[in-house]
Image 1 (tube, rainbow, N blue to C red):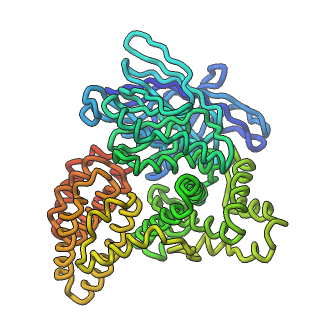
Image 2 (spheres, rainbow, N blue to C red):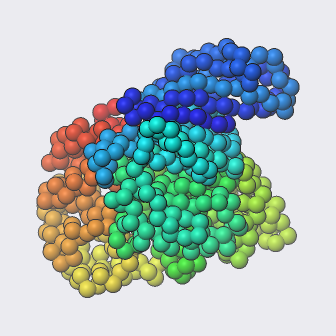
Image 3 (cartoon, one colour):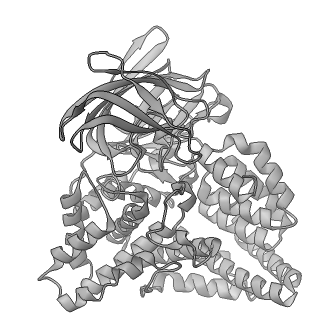
Length: 602
């Protein structure tokens, strides 16, 4: 398809047209059905500019409006047709966030960015908005000068006319609609490698250079495991704080949150995860959101393999252990028998955003770790991953196809009895924690765990010890403390002594902070865990910092758990509601929707 759009900041709309080339998948195809949401369809024409009839169904609350186009004479299977749809988006488009100058770093120019995953592309352009449909695309985007437009595609050129700039793009690699991305703002570029640059506002771009300077090393390491990087450029866009995710793997232009700017590259490994998506998710894509684990589980598995190659074997297990903690929290949040805690949940009629959690990431990865250990380690598994990417590149895939490929690939290389042990359906459908636990090397977490246990007995860890830990080891320390705190508070609640236990933990946290200064950390991952513990313990002194944290950025990983904890705490419930109400417009539409549900406002 080809997009030709004008960006209008005054009306908060994109206006123009999309040219679609469609191929009939069955004989006697006389209509084309597309997904839309809140789009104003002006007219539709065929290649000869003849008008085409079209109709729209009644809007669905989750899935939007079905657009059915009568293409005229029915096509034979394999025949192609081209049509042009003139349309405009709505200011309420769930894919597009419009930021006023006040919400940017420079405070002078407006800013726009999109987030189409999972099913929001339909509110940006008419499409078959499913991961199972892939397409190449080109685009021409016209913006007010001096703003810059970037997309998840190669940059081809720019032209200036009057007070407007037009930018052209080409994406020759087929990809699903959720990976179409657009950003418009006062952006500058800094080169960080032979195929990579950081883009951001002038006030932020230099901070990203040092933080992400190892990008080429990460790319080369991933290539050594799964084969060539096919997307050409790997640029990084450092977004304004309201971006709702840690990163988004938009091809050619990964979007990342400024919460990664710790100043010491300690959180830059998020980029390794997004780089891994260049193969797992982008090149080989799940056919439906039921198999989202095949995007995220495979991606986490490759991410940790890159970390292992760069930092050593034990770091693979360290990060896997941290992931299990996140998985336990998701399972606790949903309930251990909940449909959304399955690797392959039932999603009929369900908004995929509602099912978004660490489950597909961590359960998917743990299944792949199990398979690797079963068949003989990474010397056997790594060639399987490379062959998987080569076999299914540019395609979409189901779990059953992966199973069949895996068994066929290993036939004659691994004993049949070994492969027969794999209980595929139980792994896929058992709710809760992974069907079978993996044995992980805990060497790098043992010291953190012991220090947390001692600290919870009022033998506070010394800052000299903490200073020698990596960020990941500090996270393990804080998460172990939180586990102990949660368990003790639950027991105390059952026996009627919850307030007494909270006071004990308040004293521990105050002593710990006076020694180690966690409340003053610049590291968002550490701040997040510190505020969680403080709110759970009823330590009201953390609330001002927590409110500042959740209103200075909109990353859902951070803001949703903290809002939920505040909402559940009698002393902070009203503060949570007032804070969200006052700052709701700052958050991305996806984050705002999910926070409203968390706070029982929707």
